[in-house]
Every structure is written in C-alpha cells, then in structure tokens.
Length: 345
Ligand code: NDP
Image (cartoon, rainbow, N blue to C red; front, side):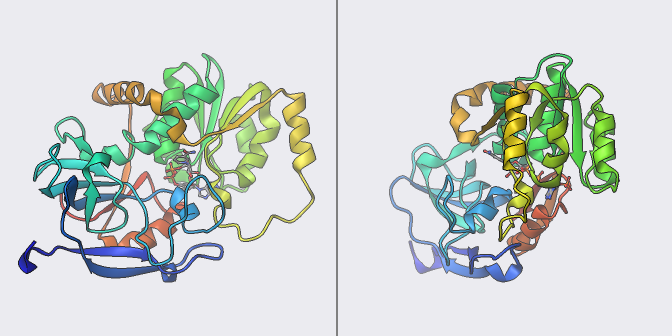
C-alpha cells in the first residue's frame, strides 16, 4: 500500500471502566492508520453502527459470557459497511457487508466473518435491528422458551426497542394477547397504535403497579424479561401457574455498582417459582443459531407483507456514539439505536 492509500480510521476506544452509569469520560476518540490488507482480509468503510445494551457489560471487567473490552481497545459492536478494497475472493469493492467492526469509521476485517447484504432485499440498517441480532433474540427466546399459546397473555418491557417490539408482534402472530411496558405516554401510544399491542403500561407512571394489574385481567403466562428491577417486581405476583420467563436482559441493573439493599427477597422469589411451577430460563441468542434461517424467512416475510413494524432511532457521526449509548441505557432512544457513521453512497 502506498503512502497515498493509507486509510485512517476514527475510533472510539474504552478510556476507563465505568463505576455505575457510564460517562463520556469513559470513552476516547482516536485516529489511527489502518494496516495493509493481507490475504483473506477486506477494508470496509462503516455506514451504520449498532448500539446495544450488552455493550455496558463489555465495558466492565466482571465475569460474563464474553470477554471485556480492554482499556485502549476499540469498543465492540455490530456494523454495516461497504467494501473499499478486498483480498478475499468472496467480496469485491462496493459490496455491502455485515461485520463486527466496532465503534469506528473504517476497519480491516477478516472476510471469513462477513455476511454480504443486498440493499434491494431490505434496508441495510435492518440487519442490525429487526432482521438482525435483536430481532433474532426476540424470535428465538420467545418461541423456544416462552412458547406463547393462543389466548395466553405475554408481557414484555423495553417494549418499543428492537427486542421488545418484535416480542409483542410475534406473540400476536401466535394468537396471544400482547402487553407492553415502556417509559412514557408517547412510547405507550406507539405500542398500541402502531405495533398493535393489546395494552401498554407506562413504568414511570405513579400508579404503574395498578395499571399493570388492570392490563392483565387473566394474569401473565409469558413474561419476556428484558429489564428486571421494579418492573420485574410488579410482574412476579401476576404470573400464572406454569408461566414461562425467558430471561433475556436486565437493563435496570447494568449500571448497578453495589448489591441492592435488603430485605433478602430470594426466599420469596424461589417460593413463588415452586408454588406456581414457573419456568425461568436465561439465554444468550447465539445458542439458538439453528433457528436463524426460520427467523429470517418469517420476519422478512411479515415485513414485506406490511404486517410487522419496526422503528429506528439514528444519531449522526461516530463522535456522538458515546452520548447516544449513555442515552440508550436511560431510555432516551425510541426504537433501534443506530449511529449513522457515513452515508450509504
Ligand atoms: P432497547 O432499544 O429497548 O433499549 C433499552 C430500553 O430499556 C430503553 O430504551 C428503556 O426503554 C428500557 N429501560 C432502561 N432502563 C430501564 C429500567 N430501569 N426499567 C425499565 N426499562 C428500562 O434495547 P434492546 O431491545 O436492544 O434490548 C432489550 C433487552 O434485551 C436488553 O436488556 C438487552 O440487554 C437484552 N438483549 C439480550 C440478548 C441475549 O442474547 N440475551 C441479545 C440482545 C438484547 P423505556 O423508555 O421504555 O423504559
């Protein structure tokens, strides 16, 4: 590669580990020269970066299902990019690809880990949301663990996000009643009016617990757990005999720096699991890989037929990723949170 062709990437690296809620000081903007391509590698410019709650876990060194980002490393993340230069036979300049390239403007990536995208099939950004990891999380977790039956009641929080909005709509397709929990009247109106949820409850309302009870007159058969915290506490007493709880996420606790104050609620919780014969099962979406084809076929079909809605929330510029991410943990996003790093063409 000649000096003229050296490509610089603008990157957001982890500057320090947060203690509690992350701040912009935990991130640092850097510009680095990318290395020359070797055989099998591809140079891409990044168009969309996905911001997801799991990234909070990667900022921490606590043991988890994936390794933490090290201090000084580029923040991890799913991206949609376009090939600038390729030394992999499966890709050529101009191709659109799905890559895990992280929070940066350009990247050299191993072609073996890329998936080609066709913008004629679906908008490119959807491969990070409704037709990507979050949509698949909803599809696999709900159908494999939640197993909603006709006439049952399914409850999900963070319901306007990419996971929750898909959970509610898939539950409806299975003939269940979908009840969404979200923060604020605007998000609740969207659940009822645009997504077709049967009821929506505002977890920020002072009478949230009563509103939730009223919204589930026959109790709850499936609680798709996205948040934990006060929402989970309100839901637990309403679970029916043999209810299923896919434990997908606990966003209300991701910024916890200390254990909650007593009293110890574990015995009460376990006794409810016992007495009501509850199934509580955690999962990480990657374990359901074998369902991926079914997911793409079903959800893309429903979108094409105009029977499945999704919403995206864009912020422009890689330099704004930290603030947008901090906002995501606070519920400031309305729909799938994406950074538009560059224009599509
Ligand atoms: P969202 O886009 O829905 O964003 C998170 C939302 O969580 C916020 O917008 C906010 O919505 C809500 N929220 C934040 N804090 C609280 C709180 N204290 N109480 C109630 N709600 C809160 O995120 P995703 O759809 O991408 O992800 C949803 C969940 O799924 C997350 O927990 C995530 O970690 C998990 N997940 C798990 C995967 C797995 O493999 N197990 C894979 C992908 C995601 P509002 O304003 O409505 O409160």
